[in-house]
Length: 110
Image (cartoon, rainbow, N blue to C red; front, side, top):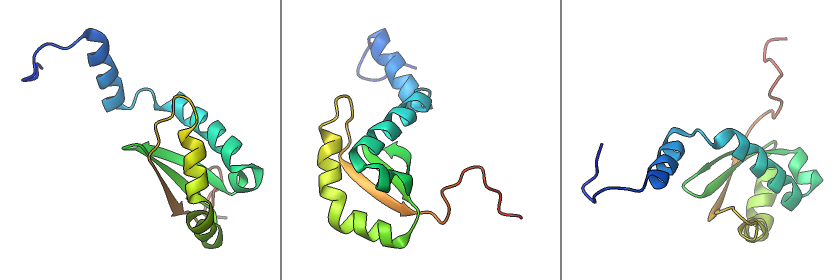
């Protein structure tokens, strides 16, 4: 489908298609998780999980309300500044969301 702005370079069109379909996310999430662990430190990283990047906003799942409050109130600006310094990452915002259990392999029916 051609846009009203005229022809596009093939590389630009393919990059846009990959981004729209989310085809490059699997490796990107691992890279983001590694960067998050390095920046946040072991204690925070063990109780959080990178969920997604949406519109340059990094979404982080947090194990407890207390930690979420601590991160949002006291650490958010320094974490965001450190993320912005990472080469190749274009993060403008951090969003923390509460999750009851971070265990992906646990089942709720025991």
